[in-house]
Image (cartoon, rainbow over all chains, first blue to last red; front, side, top):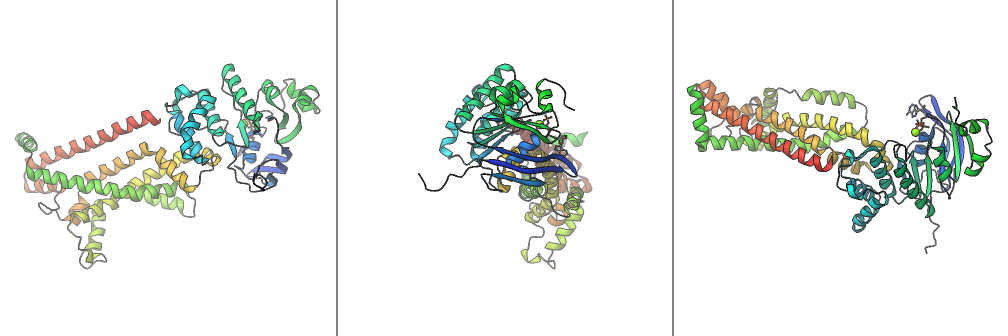
Length: 242
Length: 230
Ligand SMILES: Nc1ncnc2c1ncn2[C@@H]1O[C@H](COP(=O)(O)OP(=O)(O)OP(=O)(O)O)[C@@H](O)[C@H]1O
Ligand SMILES: [Mg+2]
């Protein structure tokens, strides 16, 4: 073991973060800590700011106000973080080629690339489609390939923006199993979903956003049993938040 | 219609003079396309991926340069390469090299402008994914050029079409010297003005067949590649 403390992105902290698009506030006054442990699940209505929060947490967009720090550092390189987009873009390569590309981008050793590619294909169940052009996959298959590509970075924090949005129940279960597996080996998962059942099944803690504000951040058990805010109660009850 | 018959005979007989003209034409135009691609694709990628003041103006100028009149380019290169011109000491005037230079100047803006559009469209699509994968500027350019390669073939074909069809520039800088700088297009112009229509028509047919064949090959390669990479 080296004497150096391992470089880690955790805890990931938002301190009074505001994000503006031009003059329009998209997120305001977000103070939030993501720490090691079970997945953190972001929920909230369309347009509440989930994607924006995830992108800021990945480091893809800067905070207009406040500070975001990864393991205490403000400009931590993102090489141990991975992001799966709500609408992933497939590179114009084969399915396996997309994974190989992500592995090479993450500086995986050349000799290991083929083996890790087939391993990742197996993890997301795309082995039979390995040689297909990625852009011809169905929406659900593309989402699984995007997950494999994200896993190829061997991340310490994995951001998943609605990872099962266009999947059937069978594929959803398969992805949830993968998420549980990677969380169990110590990868911090931060994900968004509109599926409250999924939030309950996977979430260690829940973050409820509404109109760019943080409404509630509590352990999943408490959130669903004893929601503190009226917004949370109404959201769980399936009422529209306006 | 007797002109057509003898033209066909000429083509089918594999006349050595005709063969030399065809070979030189292809050599000049394909070399020019190759050099223009080496200049145009990186230039297009640069304009697609960078933001600097004057960029929009540069793109407008580049697009306008696609329509450069060949005779004007020929004249400019002629002035550069003529004995008293700045590059006169190279001694290239009235050589195939001079013709390649002129056609490169004609074709490079076409390839650059089309490559810029192609690469920028793909960049808009890939931008966030590449950012999330931490791809640096060099990797970005390489990825975009590689993934756009089938569309870039179209840019090269447009450039080749331009080079193969033009007569004004190579006539001026090459001089249409028999057996040395005479190409299909300059020969057609000359034979037509001399009244030797069979040879002119024969060369015209060959030129069109070659352009069709090259486009066909490129199209086939593109389709085959797309089947694999999507
Ligand atoms: N670049 C931008 N410019 C202007 N407005 C933006 C921009 N990005 C996001 N927004 C707006 O910010 C709000 C939050 O968007 P965001 O994508 O974060 O929502 P979300 O919670 O992920 O929604 P959904 O559930 O529909 O995915 C939306 O109203 C959106 O229109
Ligand atoms: Mg979203």
